[in-house]
Image 1: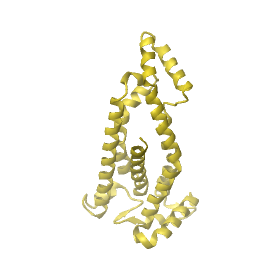
Image 2 (image 1 turned 180 degrees about the horizontal axis):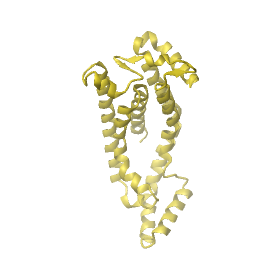
Image 3 (image 1 turned 60 degrees about the vertical axis):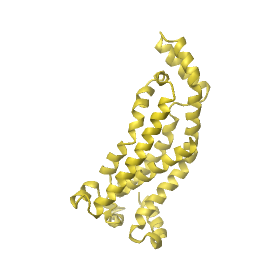
Image 4 (image 1 turned 30 degrees about the vertical axis):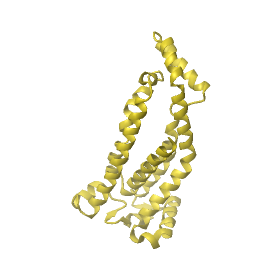
Amino acid sequence: MSVFARLVEQLADLLQPFFHASATAAAIVLFTALVRLAAHPLARAAARGQRARAALQPRIAELRERHARHPERLQRAVLELHTEARVSPFSGLLPVLLQLPVFYLLYHLFSSATIGEKPNSLLGHDLLAAPLGGHWADAVGGGVFGGAGLVYLVLFAVVAAVATVNCLRARRTAAGSPAPAADAVPGLGVVGKAAPFLSFLTLVTVAVVPLAAALYVVTSTTVSAVERAVLS
């Protein structure tokens, strides 16, 4: 974690002339953008996989008619079809899984009082009036519309806007595909029904994690939404 802390500090030093006291917050946003850039090939692969799955829908519909009375045969046939086409129903999860270790590191970096047996100096950095190691509950203590509270209100507004866009896009995609076809892959039907609303869980994440980790989540979800719009 000390290596990761030095990386954040070095990025903050580079951005200091431009962002002054909020340089560390800007460094986290920049670092998030770099992580998303590294994950972009996976995002492109996930977009290709989504288009390939959409192309398989007519064949899956035929399989449903052929095996209407035999759900087990239908599941096997659909899985074989995905294997034959080299399409994974869950390929879209890869970009998310890549980011989990980075989120974990940020969470612990701004939740630890010490780094390498030395005081964690990063906890003294702020985004405007909100400490990067603080939480929404701490900000509310100073007033919802106080300096720190306003920082969180802006983050919540961004997350809500991105989640709404993601939800509408996911529902349009689901409406354009035969809904029963998703049930042919075990567990995929449940995921498909819940997926449009999962983005709103980011609001809970932003509320409970340190502000530094919340910045990572907000930036990542925003970039991801733009990325999907461009690749779709």
